[in-house]
Length: 305
Image 1 (cartoon, rainbow, N blue to C red):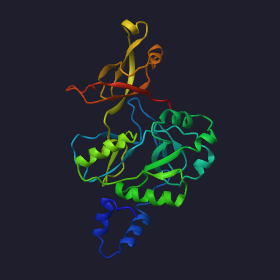
Image 2: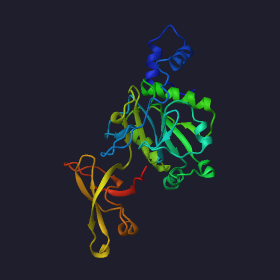
Image 3: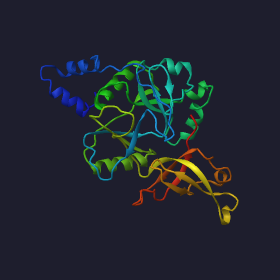
Image 4: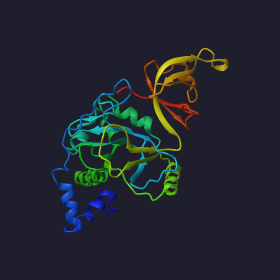
């Protein structure tokens, strides 16, 4: 049996009249903790790139991870299940096979569609088809990290996800493994080991936090390099070897600031650059005093959803 989350242990300790098993059962089955099926409706992305899902902020360097649950950051496609419809982060429905959808529990879930480390492009091609390829979907896993229909702290939502998915008995429907990490040094060691094995980074959920949409201090991402999305608002012409092609994209950040993004673009992308109005993802190491990304590099175009 996995080690109980911090908030769950605190709850048990404050209830001396119940046995450990009885306390867990009462907590998981109590009406106030049960999810409201279909209550979590994912709203479309607005002009600022925000949506009705919970979004992560960069993890502050050197901060202690005490009070957080830590998991691997999977480079998959975000998928939110409201009990009836599986949706992208934008709110558009995902055309998954009927057998996949019918096996999902009738409760709200949040997670990533995923196949393997380093296989994002192949996965994206599978899950974005208008008509699902049944055979290709057999390789897709749904890695669930949250239950947004709950009005309970994250530690208790984790317990519910684990129990619910175990009851579903589907090998491709899996809870994301969560762990506690003692200090900043151990967190950094875990990050390095995860990346060494081909992982993208770590996610940190505050154990006592209630679910809320948007960017919040309840959820962080920790990566060797940070990433962010920006809006393409212009194309800057290339020079020298790049004459006649796009030298850089003029990108508007969520803050409204703009910068030239040239690193990371292939020659094919420079000849046919992402159009104005496209959202692109870029990586960067840190920020300048004015807030602009340092050493930014183009990663990918965010697919239309």
